[in-house]
Image (cartoon, rainbow, N blue to C red; front, top):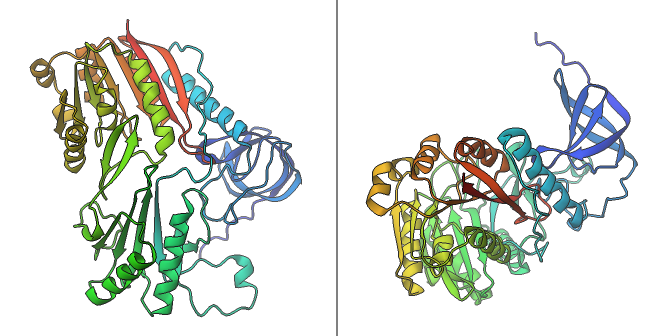
Length: 469
């Protein structure tokens, strides 16, 4: 017989003093650190503990005794349920301050290297409707709130279009309005959902891997171009055509309408054939007069306007005069490489994804850039001492790795290559700090600039300039 779990207490009148990892807030009760979602520093609250270990606990607010003077009213009706935008209740100015502190804490605690004063976080001019890419899930298992479950109402239709509920992989929160993207995205998603319901088109059932309408990706760019990719869970050509024709007829402004038939258990379409229904197979973003081609599988920073600021910071830190050989590691579709090419003698980009490298080459060609070279392959396998001997020792290296940071072999090759300047762009200050500790053998950190790409979330990009000692 299973032992009955001991009921954990409610901690009364505790003060939330800081923010913590994953967008949570933090309170200290004697020697216990308590992590609390949706709290604000300065809140006085009663907190019910959900999980307790020796030195820390997790809990949730059951009563807000005295709200923090910094609290603001969230704009979104789905705040606190969908799991995104966990800082919507904090003023944007405070969000920027806490992101700077997050960077400072990571570099101080993990890197433990000599640091200059960290600049204030570079904020986003648009704090809503800033994302150029959103991905939605269609499901026949709509998430019901406790209020709905206890209302006595019978929900005959459980079809939904929205986001997966954190901790409930098979449940989807039906989203009426998401404030992260241009409202065109809301209109396309809501139309598609209603059209499917009215026409008896099935929504995906993740547990049984059946159902036609599965996922939708929407990209909206500053150029006005829009891409929609619909994923279907069944190969029913007649109904697929019916859905896509309806979207095309009602939204003629869509530049590229594509689809994929995904019969796998997981939602990833990276390994699937993506087919064109109408329009072009790509859309184009503009940055400082350069046009960047974006396909359905292309990576592109999801905040276009803020990406320009991020890349401008990286270029400024590189200090290019036109004579440098630049290596751009983890180049993606070559956005940074092509962005800095006009200020360098030559730029060599390396990226794991072959499709991305194909896009990078196309972007160079489309913009008349002829001083770039791109190579596809695993970074630790491509960037070797032999590669550097063949192509030349770089004057500047720009690195923009994934969240996991750089492989130790890559760090060692960089240390052997000894570029005069390294510009390290990171979406994860913790792994960046780990890598900075390794680079400290030969490099000194001389500039740190956090950049906010994702308002109302705890995520922050950070750009660090390192100089050869």
